[in-house]
Length: 134
Image (cartoon, rainbow, N blue to C red; front, side, top):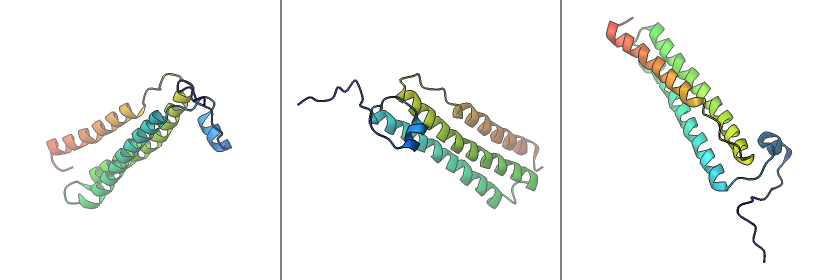
């Protein structure tokens, strides 16, 4: 019996939606696809944490922050949640396509986005704590 060559992943039939979404190329090793999925899920967990943080700031910090600062921090966290969630999907798709076409993996846009957003929220809170209630 001939066993398939592991260095050449076989092409599998896909439905039209999957084929149009993933593009041409060879099936990557399932371990890489699953690792890509785990990374996507980690970004989604991060987005959910921002979402929960934004809701918590708005719901539970009425006596700590003024309404404008509270609203600004909450909205910043909610917008970050939305951007991280959407970017996670785009990143997953770009990585999956790159693996299938045996191209270099794309740089993540999420990392600077997350860093800048977190720095913005932290800066707002530092200003608030440094200069008292606004």
